[in-house]
Structures are given as structure tokens and as C-alpha cells.
Image (cartoon, rainbow, N blue to C red; front, side):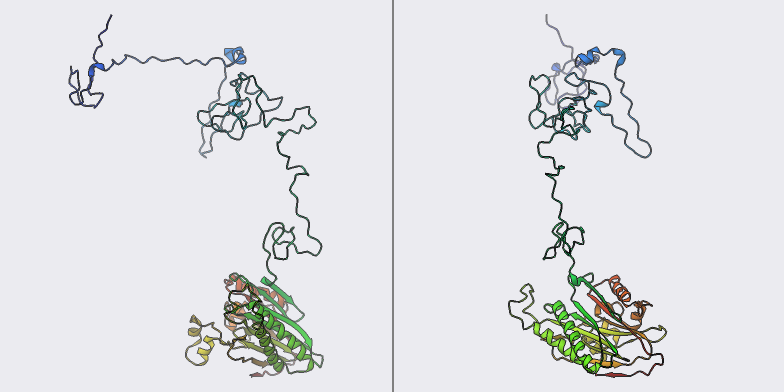
Length: 504
């Protein structure tokens, strides 16, 4: 028999939500058939959800032994996350009916490291939403084989049998075990006796190109930092913090005069960076000047004349670099633009005389052992700033503040306007220290007073340590240039003598 459906009392149209009047059969706005709206049930029934037993093990468990899940701990004031309970932490069964806590092959289950989409884990550390958790066979590269399958699932990570001779507690690897001696990576052979060892890994041998054969680290070049100490002179040269190479060079030596008295020599050269091969120019000049002095001083040549001749010899050595064949030093992109060039400054201690010579803007300072006595700069720069001051066009502060201040007007090189070696002879009446340096140092201690303040008090007794301190002073100041300094402690006889100065 047919039934009549009672129209529900609606205040709004279900289609367009327009207000309705009591007794409307259709919506006046959209024409919705209000008689087709089903009556609202008086109540919503509650459905009981039952979980069927997963297997024999579960059906055998009495109701009194129901699993009691512990309440999750709340986070404390330190916001430490609450502990996570994993599925295998409490008794249960998997989809195959086996207990979750049952060891696999007589061993404890190994937690899986991750879960792929649609896969299960034995006792995973994280499970994506909607994924199952099982203690059965872990997924392999192929499709998952369920417990209903009669085929034995392929285990790519199966362990060796407990009673196997190869049983080690690890999974059997498809590839050779890299931990075995046969397949272990070859360790670098120890460098042969006398071979250079890498400064980075301390084990690899350095190849002829300057790179470690073990770690590939580029080795510092020999000229990046150089030190040398004799009985009465010491010198230190450093690349600095901004330059990619050390373009300075030095030579220190000692010899004997015809009367048997000692003569000590220090030569410092600074390569002109705007010229080609400045590092070669400074090396050639320092070596040539030093060799010339060691040859002329024992013959009895006056030290001041010997210094002049040494500067000329150094100039000729630098000029010779510009006469090399066109194919030489093709790595230098600026070889064709200008000739190699450098500056030179030197000092000779012979008898009671101190001889200095220079071309360029490298300097010599005199620092008395008694710091209450006045200090002095013994050289004058061949530079734009020095010319402006000498001509009375600027004072020293104004000249050295100009951007052209350090443009040199004298240097050693084939393109030099005219070689004008400067020499001066001094006869100090008190002991002190002679500081021979490039502008990489005096840029951070320009005045004689500033240089004296930077020199350690015991530098006359420990010249090498004093030179190291001065180089460190320049590096601490910024190290914008190569830094080279030589220290010569000057001793006088107790009775003393007057002082004299002759400049050429």
C-alpha cells in the first residue's frame, strides 16, 4: 500500500536558501520541489563497531587479558616531546595472525628505517597516514606477497642462519662487504723518505704541481712565507692576506773584510705589481746585489761604493728578464705590456759604519737600543708624495693622503727612466737596530716613532723573533701587501765615537 510522506517544516529552500512560507510546495525563487525533501529522522542510531579476531592467537586470548594501552605522557614545561609508542611495544598480532613480539627466525626484529607508500614495516619508526603496520615480511623491490600466498616471499635482507658458520649478526649483502680487507678502499701509501708531506692531511705525498695526491689540497708555495737567520741578521717575508703570491724577496749574508773584521749584508726587494713577473724581478735583484757585495767587500772595496755597484748589478739582472725569448713565461698575460720591475733597499754593517742604499720606496729605519734616544728614517722615498714634499708643494700629511702618494718615481727595470742609486753612510755612536723593510710593513708604521713602537724591546738580542713580530704587526693591520723585513743589530765599541752622515 502506498504511503504519504509528510512535508518537513522548512524555513529555507534547500536549493537556493530563499525564505519559505508555511505550506509552500515549490520554491518561489528557484522552483525547487519541496515535496521531494525527505523527512528528518527523529534520532541518529549509534552503530557498534566490532573488531573480528585476527587469527588463532587472538581468539585464544581471554577477555581478561585485553591489551591496556598506556596513556601518552604530556609535555612538560621544557616542551620535550612525549614518548612515542610503537606497534611492537605491546602484545598484538599482525595481519597473518602472528604475535607482534615474536622474534623473527629466533632473533629480535630489526626496526625499519622508513615506510614507502602502501608498504608495511616490522616495527617502523614512522608510518604514513593510511598505511598498515605489520611484523611480517618486509617489502622488497618487487610487489608485496601477502600471508595468503602459498609462495615463500623473497627476502633480500634475510640474515644468515643462527647455526651458520657465516653467522655474524648482520644481513647478508648482495654486494661484497666493503669492510673486508679485499674490498676496502686502498689507503694512501705513506710518503717516501724525503718526500714532501701535505700540510692539510699530513699523510699524502705532494706531486710536482704542488697538490696532494691523497686529498688534492693545494700546497702553500715556498715563497708564501720565508725566514732566514744568521748570527747578526734575520729576515722574514710573508705573502700577506690580500695578494695571491709573494712578490717580495730578500737576501742576507755575512763576509769578512780584508782586515778580518765582519761585514753583514741585508737586501730587500719589492716587485712592482703593475709590471710583469714582479716576483722574478725581486728575486733576481736581491740575488745579484747580494752576490756583488760578497765579491767586492772582501776585496777591500769601500762599503758605500760596493753598495752602489751592487744596485747597478741588480738593475742589470732585472733588465735581462725583459730580454728573454718571446715564448718564455707565456702564462703571464701582461708580459708584452711592460718589463719586469722592482724596488731595492739594502744595508751593510762593516766596522763602525752603517751603509744604506736604495731605489724606490722601500725603507731603512734606525731604532736605538735605548728607546729614550731619538729614532730616525735613513732613506727618502722615490715616490710622488716625496717629490711633492721636497718641492714644497704639499706638506707630508697632505701628500701621503693623496691617492697618488705611493706611485714610485724610481725603480729597477728596463723601462725605468734613469737609474739613480741612492747611498748613505752613517757612523752610529750608540747600539741600536737597523730595520730594512718594504712598504708592506711601513704602511702600518710609517713614522720613525711608530716603527720604534712596533719593534719588540728585545729585538736586538732576538732579531728573528723581532722580525716575526713586525710581520705579524702588518698582518694584524690588514696585510694588504706583501711584507718583508730584515733586522740587523748594530753594536758599537764601549768608548763610542762621533756620528757622520754622507749622502750621495
